[in-house]
Image (cartoon, rainbow over all chains, first blue to last red; front, side):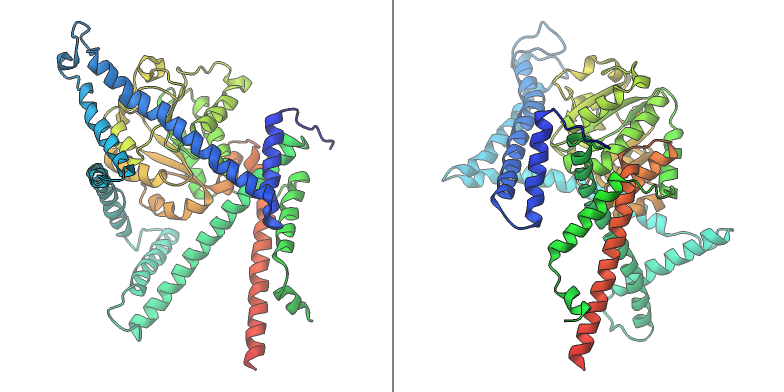
Length: 229
Length: 278
């Protein structure tokens, strides 16, 4: 196993920045701070440029220019009010105005104007999220929870019983209108045990995710940079 | 000072060092610990096998460089499975940091000799990033080309051969989502699977995997790959030896070490609490 160091300057820069970030494990230091600030700056710059060229230009600017030039489905039509029937691209001036209204917030006076587009955004998202949750989570999950306890097979029946006991007792754990003693106390304790198993599984998965990041960086250093693998 | 007292006051940097060594050694000298594919992973593979050969599949890749170790192996294996069936792949990205990375990953697979015939715009397209999260998903339901008039590099999508038969979600026999968080699998289930009833499978990061198991139970997801372990199991089923498989030895040792630390921490704390009480 002999090293074959990378000849790519980009890989060397990435390796150095990885080392800078790892140095925080020893203690806070200027190398770590440099890498951290560089990451934030590059991310912000990348995000702004990406949004401009992949969102604003193709989805707002180009349709508006075409709309005002009358370049609809019928080439003979010229001018914003002569776009062919069914071509509503000039109407995209409305979201453009709403977008500009958002930036009024930066002026010393008239900040209230930005509340109008914010109201539209909040309203649209509340509608989309509510419908999606009701269809995708609430109804579908309640439906899936109502399952027969005896399926004809021992294994799947046992699974269904454990699932139902876990579901019901976990719900009892979150029932606070009565003191948790007697039957309710026992049920809530069983529910707590199920919840603990759930939290434990969640913690195990979280550890796996974080360790995966470390493995990924080591794979990069050993493979792409040093060439040991 | 007893051993337990020493453990109670150990500098955390020793723990970081031990973790680093435990991850490094198996990467240099693989232990080849066995990998067993679980039911969610087998179901994922089986669902992918039901996709008709030659059809066009929607495969949103919603992640950025932070999820490379877990999600890139899944993306590559899923892509190989689809291309082995001559399927065409349409890839939107709803994470701003993702399009460039996803483009590189897909091109790496396309560069493999057995996929030499695969052409951009014919066999796959990277639609790129679009802001709007759930709103984009809803918009795609009214037309994929409406939501993505141009691809990642600014080429109009309407003229591409792969988009000739793509209208909306009804054009796809399966939705294969690889996701690192929001927006991702949860939103695709809520906005697309539930509304348009399109069969769906998902590959997700380990940290988000537990919240998707209810979707498996309700059959909203037909299969699930959870984290690096899910990716390694999928590679095993597909007879591949990718980066997820090679990382699982390190993953297993790291988990053992974390478990040992938790047990030792509890023992030390119990002894200290017991000691102070007496």
